[in-house]
Image (cartoon, rainbow, N blue to C red; front, side, top):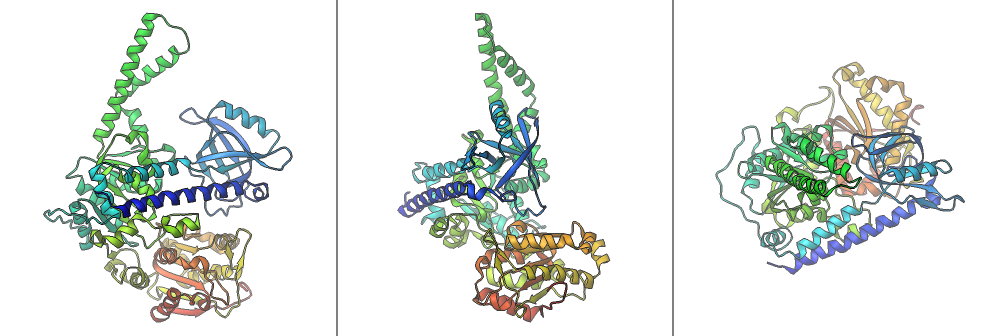
Amino acid sequence: MNDNSSISHLALLDELLDKEAAFEAAAYRRSLAVDNISGRVCEPDCKYPVAISGWGYNALNQIIMTVTYGSDGEELENDFEPGKAVSLFHLSPDGSQVVEMPFTCFVDTFKEGVIQIQLPGRQALSAISDRASNALLGVRLAIDGTSYRVMHEALQKVMHTADEKLSRLRETLIGPAHPRFRQLPPVQFPWLNETQNMAVRKVVAAMDVAIVHGPPGTGKTTTLVEAIIETLQRETQVLVCAPSNAAVDWISEQLSRRSVNVLRIGNPLKMTDEMLECSYERRYAAHPDYPELWNIRRTLREASEGKTSRARQEQLRRMRKRQMELEIKINADLFEQARVVSCTLIGSAYHILEHHHFATLFIDEAAQALEPACWAAIAKADRVVLSGDHCQLPPTVKCYEAARAGLSQTLMQRVVKSKPECVTLLTVQYRMHRDIMDFPSKWFYHGALTAAPEVADRLVSLMDTPLTWIDTAHCGFGEKQNKSMSRLNADEAKLVVHAVRDYVESMGLERLVADRVDFGIISPYRAQVRMMRRLLKMQRFYRRMRGQVAVNTVDGFQGQERDVIVISMVRDNENGEIGFLGDLRRMNVAITRARMKLIIIGNSETVAHHPFYARLFEFFSQRGEVVEAVLDEDNA
């Protein structure tokens, strides 16, 4: 089966990946221009200058360099996650250009103000030591060429496959083929609601593809775990993937807690402590045959350092043969014992999985995954189950041209639109008050969501309302653009801090502290978040609520929830320009983080130029309360 439309689509994705890679490379070069180096100490992907504060070794006997940098405690996002590739750089002697060192390092550990970096060897150590004495060093995330290579290879493989099953799956997902379903006795789990049970049944019955569409708070992970466990009643082993290590670890942890044997594939530096116990490396070292293998490896290393007799060479040859036998046996045992193999989508191309194939692939958070990355894993399976919510945050595509041409549209979006019979929408949510849920339900989910009885009327106080809009339309605040091109509304930031304090005092500080009622303050703009964090630190009032108030961007709150959510809209202009707020999926995420109370602070006249916000403001007027912002000497 070979449909030209599917091949053309994959070929286009291949071209768009090239555009994205070229855009990222150009941005990388610009970021390391001399004019852009100063003032980058708190950027999420670059720290300059850094100071070397120590040397050491990690558990794998690799050289670790510790560097420190000045931090004001307001870093919003940091991309220096353990395992990420980084490059080191310095200025040329005349200060005219940035010089990158000719080797790649990796982040070992990171905390604000301190990065521990894994060096590739002693030559790198010598080069850095020589340079550190006469030049300032910087550290920058390196471009991940591996991901692009894996995605390109996956697209080529799927386009040109001679495998009938993969060809059929390709045409079902993005071509004209219709998805097939088995007729099976219905399974029923009393602890799941009806739509969750429907989703599990569809997953089990699907011969090609099934989709679990889980809006916020609807128990997507719970449903997916049951679907995986039920699948394992019929299959020996499944592959579970997600676009990020954090998402892989989350679903893997839930499975492991249900006593499912999970084998976690990937860089141990990128795993949570709980999943390290399930890692391939940790399981390999714990195998009963590993001590013998370790001794053989040690003997072979020592023997390679000098001349040996013919008899000794024959003995070493037998040891190498035994080494290979042990390596094959340990690897086979680990995979034979595992019921679930888990990794990132890109990690599915890891050499350990090269000759492994699976009946079923589960992709969690599929709505945040680039389509080419999905194909890397799909090529290893006969059928695929996608889980996520395409009405929330999309994958990151930096090149606007590539995004507009289709790279930002996910495989899950395409299948939901073209093959709706594959989709089960989870409809009962267990997070939000019914009034907080109702607007996003109508706008994004065709009004299908209902609130579970235990949360439907839950409030911070019986005297409270779930929805409040503090309207700044007549305050004359005005927005500004800072040097990093982010938006800032200083007066609104001050108002947010004081509005939260007023709310806390009206509800009773002592009670909120005792009940551990938590707050999330969200803005789409980094500059606004930085200012609100700074203002909160300046107020002694909030010290009593340490750990109960978090401030971050929308992306920073993805996957989280809070009792009270406060959203700072920032935009305040006469032209109705809303910029970043136009990505309604981000606002869906922001709104649906709230359990019991949602407060929006912003200029209704500016944002109401967009129909979504006009309807949202009207909804607050009808179902909640709209309060005109009042300026006083403290927040003027």
